[in-house]
Image 1 (cartoon, rainbow, N blue to C red):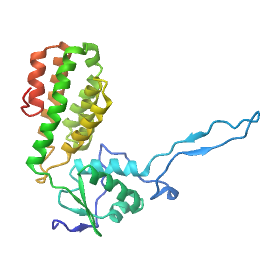
Image 2 (cartoon, rainbow, N blue to C red; image 1 turned 60 degrees about the vertical axis):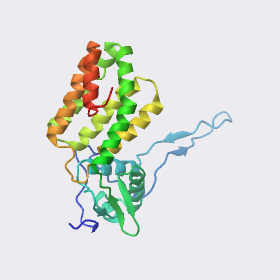
Image 3 (cartoon, helix red, strand yellow; image 1 turned 120 degrees about the vertical axis):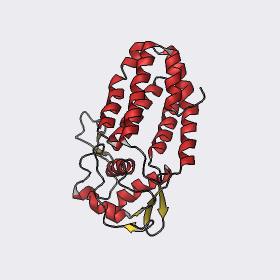
Image 4 (cartoon, helix red, strand yellow; image 1 turned 90 degrees about the vertical axis):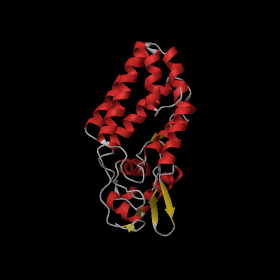
Length: 258
């Protein structure tokens, strides 16, 4: 397909790491859905506290599905996709798709093309290297500090998260790996107790996961190698082997100077 051409006949963009069904009831399609306050009968002359009914967010489900499609390579860099066509595939109106795409534009994953739709951003090697450098500047010092202060039991609790990255890498599921990879890093940084740090680092991590322009990101062998670094790093942290931790952290962040 010619680069920049709007793609109307799109495939379903739901992969293994995505909610299995993003279709919603007819009355909810294309709408933001919020909690509703439902009041019961008054008793003893005093109104009861409002009961909030939680409903799933259509836009949130679409956003998750689009993110998985981006990471999985189903939305190709340089291509333009229209909100109505994507909405038809998801069984919703164009409105929640357009809103989700606006969020992805803020994150730098897509660019708005007036009167046509959204073009998937083309990530060059320099941009990816810059993101890796910034992530290293933030995460590496924190990880090394935590390696000196967190007891082995704290690290043992993260074993299921490391195992999840290995499992998704083994089957080459790029979308599932992206989620499990970020979950592992979030859990590590959360041990610092600094939620602002976790939020900033997670945003940078997500941005670094969008595929490069050549579409070669996230090959199975790369995922397996990256996942094995999680396991090895966790083993070293549990053993409180600071020398090995320092070496593995440096390798994980592409030779960061730590």
